[in-house]
Length: 396
Image (cartoon, rainbow, N blue to C red; front, side):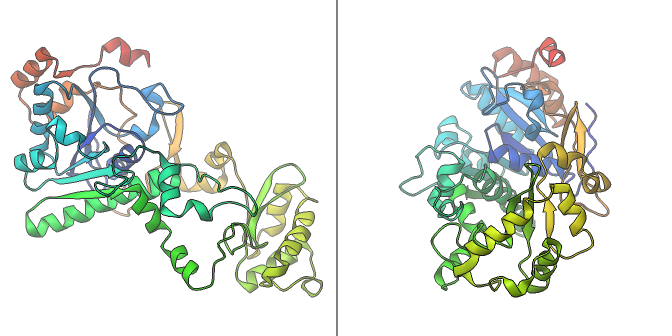
């Protein structure tokens, strides 16, 4: 397929060793911003984690091409190393030591390309007593201390989807690390290894809360603090139609506007920051919110500084007037998905194609990266790499 890179990273070449969660998210971010990312998928038995079983529906794999490689085949190792010679960065998400055993570890790759930035994504890091332990987002967020802070009063900790470990503290932080290392390489001419651990990244996202917890401004009790559902003016409330509104009126002026929208007289209420009476104030506000529908409250708050917004469903936000005005979502192969972010004034980012089927672009991508037809045919003949069957691609 014709490549149409337009983002600020155009010209950057990245090899992604297929994995799950934060690695693909990191690769998606780089591809959205214009990098030419080749995804190395398994030649046999490739599958997807989670609810998706169809590669064409795995939107996080968008914008890059797939080569199917047998990494246990000695020639499969050579396929990867040949691409490494032409790459600026690599992304891998195996447990520590796996790529070394496959012959595509940092030493192997940097020997072929001393300027390579080698990005490693793990849960617990490349070293330490937990480095070989398996886990998922919830485990890394728990280990970081952040999960202990998330949830309502007298309730167990609430898993924050996979946002803190996999995506924010994982893939996004790895992308930042790779781009930072590439900036340094411009001056030094040398590559380096990025050790991105989700447990570290989750803690980094929580830097402010580590500070609060040591200065007497944060209670260890969940649901008792300013932004953890403890404050009555920073929470979500049920409305008469079974929907919800969110309020975040922290500043006194904004809080005054919120009370005005609710029709509550501040003279008869507890003080905004009387923490001991927050539960009482929350009950009063909950009763008020239960008297109107979600959309009625949104209309009543329009033009004020009440910091009141509807809690939109995923389907609603994709067609919301603000999202539509900003073109915040795009549709590819019938699936609506977030458009690339952030936005650039001169070099707009874009999604360069739908998620690939493993091996869909084996011959095309290798050719584009300067591999000879003779070598490609040899690798195909040895089974080191394969091309996805045409009927499989067309049927999906």
